[in-house]
Length: 225
Image 1 (spheres, rainbow, N blue to C red):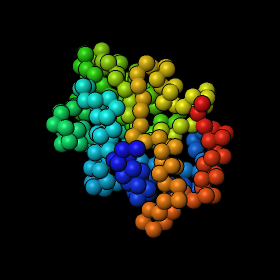
Image 2: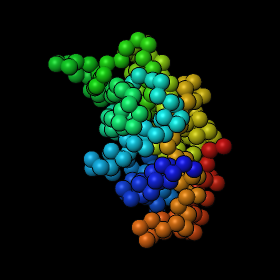
Image 3: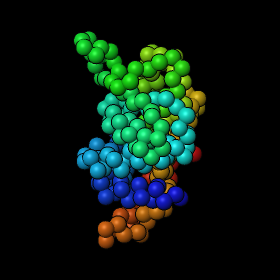
Image 4: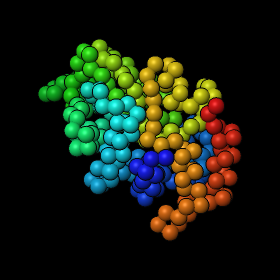
């Protein structure tokens, strides 16, 4: 595993974004881990986060795209921070774009923030995590209604690697199959578990044998095929 991915795993834990215990998800599942990207709250954290996304996007998709689209609301700071990081790390100017939840009818009218979308734009969607793919069902039509764009892919921070609500495939695999574009993550959950198991972070073991057992049982039931 690349060093920046290992650093990102530690960064999620240090930022209290990735936590282990017992959590009830929106789906009703009882999960032994939970990720909340809303816990990135400082400028230093967002700068680091943008760098990790930029490196993963560069390694996975390259930089031959025009617009980074971050769905409201959590996708907005992700798109901004990552477009800045791509400029700083690679010297490539990528426009950022996000949607508004409510259409603005005065001043800068419309549903979009940031750059307008243009016919022929190559668009990469950026999100925090995708569990069911529902947000993509909302995002793709918004992009397609604005211009004749080519959606080149989706990048999230963590692939939970659990089956969706309607199939045994993961949400990212379902997105690939349904929409025809690649969906990837900075890290996968099995990489997180492998790296953190019995490893002290700031003097504390994050995934001990009991938590590892709970994770294994969870994936025995909900793991994607």
